[in-house]
Amino acid sequence: MSNSILSERVLQLAESETLKMARMARELRAQGHDVISLSLGEPDFDTPDHIKEAAFQALKDGYTKYTPVAGLAELTKAISDKFKRDNNLEYRPDQIVVSNGAKQTIYNLCQALLNPGDEAVLFSPYWVSYYEIVKLSEGVPVCVYAGVDQDFKPTPQQLDEAITDKTKFVLFSSPCNPTGTVFTRDELEAYANVIARHEHVIVISDEIYEYINFTHEHVSIGSFPQVKERTVTVNGFAKGFAMTGWRLGYMGAPKFIADACSKIQGQVTSGAASFGQKAGAVALAASLEPTYAMREAFRERRDIVISMIQEIPGIKTNNPDGAFYIFPDISAYFGKTDGHTTIRNADDFCDYVMMTAYVGLVSGSAFGDPNCFRLSYAASEEQLREAVRRIKDVLSRLH
Image (tube, rainbow, N blue to C red):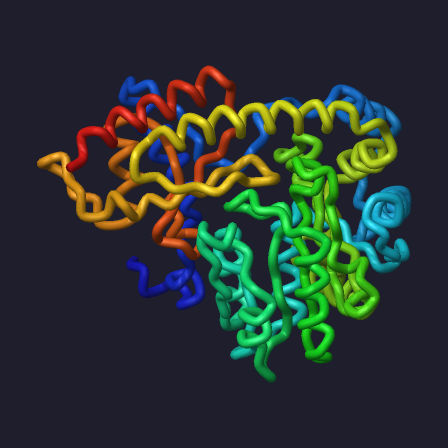
């Protein structure tokens, strides 16, 4: 039996580049190589103890049954309170939908909003799954590109020119995966003013990296009155609370969108794990000191990696203000060779670094920028220093 039995949908779906590089790293390790993998977007910290203890207690208390599809009342109330407290956002508990990770939230939204041929405007570079989920939902991704020289921030005019009568929504993340870019209050207000003029357009703001922000101000675009009623705010627990394996995300949305997403989720997974939701409610209400300590560790690592990367000739980078990635432009290496391998693009660059330096990076082509690669500095300082040293060494062989 061949691939011909598979759907066109899956055949046209790209494999996640981050997961592909993780697989390559495992294979090389199995062959005995000392691989440093900087490809996955996963904090290397453990979930804080008070959150784990809340899950243990929930299990002991019998929270082992199905929950309402949109989430336990205790958690939707905690999320509503968090939005009000931290983001100046007014979402009632019945406007909240809890999902099995923010990735499912994005999937629910695309399934609920997109008809075949509808357009979704993505700020590019974008998180790899945005593009593929839009395609999977029979939508058309429309990319608004800004490179490193623009700090990866499209202009309001670029956004305005990308919106058509087929546009359903604008989707972006801040802090951004893969670039680490953080949009300022003024920049977000300028985008809000553009979107406000197009009354048929929803804005989806992915704020999963909210707490890993080095600017001291996180701004939610939904806090601007001109787009308040048309904003979906996506967030979750994976990054800020080091809870990647818990698969717990959420969104606040206009009621009709929240209801539609709950309807989709009800036919796919139902509610998220009950005891994890209990722990999530505790995480939002408790002290954020462990989160802030994690943020400061990431800031120190960013500074180390940026200072070392900037010493490598031909690599151009911005100074990211959030998340735990750098996204350098390495187009200066295209066309260079070590006599055996020629670097034609970012895919070749990442493969070359993996096979010669045993350092796992992700090609920028997966994120909409074929001139760059993504490096996750969610690793120890020792690993980061060694990884960049190795990269510098193997790149010195290219001429």
